[in-house]
Length: 384
Ligand SMILES: Cc1ncc(COP(=O)(O)O)c(C=O)c1O
Image 1 (cartoon, protein in one colour):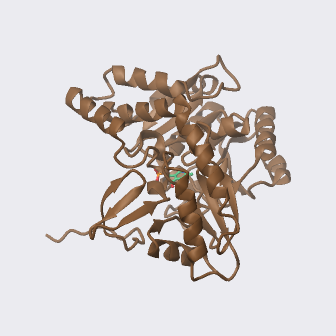
Image 2 (tube, rainbow, N blue to C red):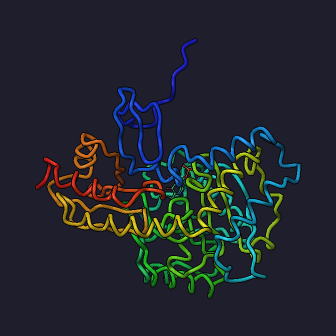
Image 3 (cartoon, rainbow, N blue to C red):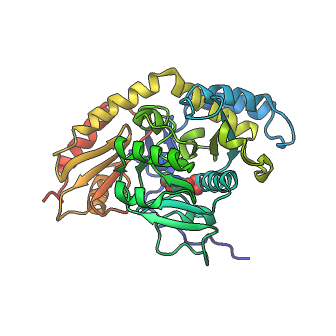
């Protein structure tokens, strides 16, 4: 029988056969500097040796086990992950985590928990948002075609960063407000401290649950473990995925214990979520984040990338840590810049904003790599 992949992705013309650290290796031996980092997944770069050794040990010891068994690997992970978390705003000061396999699942579970805990039916979300492609996640994503007939709950979408719209919309009928602290796919758009703080107080005043989607902003990417530490505003629930296990599929939905006590945990379940192999990887990532060295590197490399402002067609650099957007001058598009950089052996991402190139490299990137990018930007023939 003929069997082919469903065509879902616009594939890049790169014949990648291997990867090492921050480089992709092509079939013809050429190397490409990867400033896209597998879409925020390659936290520790490709082929990290400590991670590889830990996985190899774990595979031989216990490759998989059902969630019906209590596992030491899970407790070891929770201890390491706990060291990266802020204090919750309410409850007895601890968090409860549900483990799944992807960002969309993590968000699906966050919204299910919020609706169930509050007994309310309405969720507030934002223009420009991206939360994934499952039913609840697309309902709160700003897309013209979700592929579903109707959302599974009432949705109210408001402009991102508009305090007045939020004050008029969040009320005592609202179960949750779900927000990316920095909208990555929209083109690295920041909500900012005061907006997040306003949402926090609107939510607290109306007993609405504030949910952060930290699928991209979490796991050290902003130079802090999570965005809540970066901005000093802590949600009631947050989700993360992508880089949390350095390349293995994972989704985490993290509830303050006050929220978790208000619903039945039996609403949740997953065959693969929280398996020993993936948690071994996630433990290694959490430990590296907690050690501080990785985050110090994020801050240093971020500063170096900020020097790309003014290089070639780049007007300014926005974002935090290693979730950055290069703002491209009118007359040149982000796609032109992406193609021009690829021709010079550098892979970058684009976004929903045709004028923004997105950078989300491994957090282990060497600061000198920013200078490589700056020079390549200056060499671009597409300069206006
Ligand atoms: C902010 C955000 N949330 C959720 C998702 C969905 O994650 P996944 O593709 O793992 O389902 C993504 C994916 O790009 C994302 O960027």
